[in-house]
Length: 153
Image (cartoon, rainbow, N blue to C red; front, side):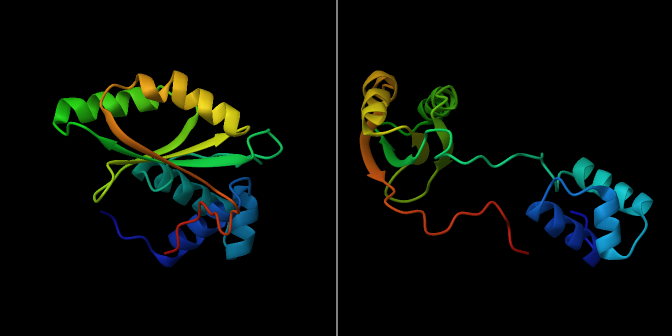
């Protein structure tokens, strides 16, 4: 993996904070010209350091104020069952994040919903249709204390 210099790291920090900053704005902030900054950003994108750009939405304004955390343990753990579970979870639009875990549970799911009734319906009509789930534990966020997409480096 290519080592990044301090200018590359500064560009990543700036874009991580505000991906709408223009190349010209970033160059001005770093006391550089726009052309080398543009080339560095394109290289960082091409090498995969920058995966894609997103807008972070306000879940409350979109009527998805409830965050549910589901801890899923599978009955069977061979490769086929795990692959099938992962494929089926990716098809559920309600699931924002899914992590295959080591430890007591197999998968961690994060879901944003309108309310508890919607969660109940999601579990009843969608999640329960996935056959290999052994144990499902649900937790509900009372207060979001800290949430960031930034990676500190």
